[in-house]
Length: 156
Image: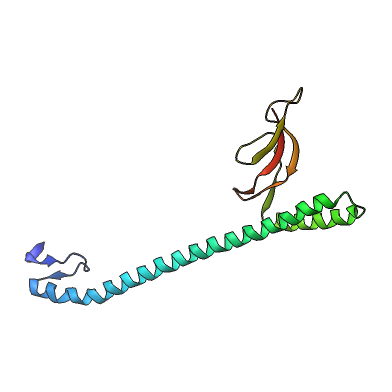
């Protein structure tokens, strides 16, 4: 440094001619530094609360979607009665509502462990092992997350 001036680290690049001036300038920054730390803590707290609220919202959404999926299961069972056309119409409307909310039906023709749960298996001639022979319950995904696996009877 020219002229023997010292620069105090952490402060602006204002040179001090005497160490005493540097010592008296440091307390000026202390309240600002404390306020910055307090703001950072507040931001961290808000971010944590936002993430927790997001997780809570996701759980609520998944619970609602699974309840609606159970209604679709009942509709599938009721289709054998005389009201089948009316019941089909209700089912299609519910399926459309679920698709709009991001629910995707799992429709695998082969057993995929992450997506398909085998509830029974049977030998089948001319069918490759692991092929889905019958869907017992439809499965659903919400984005990349499996809400309920497709339940099937598979060939062995």
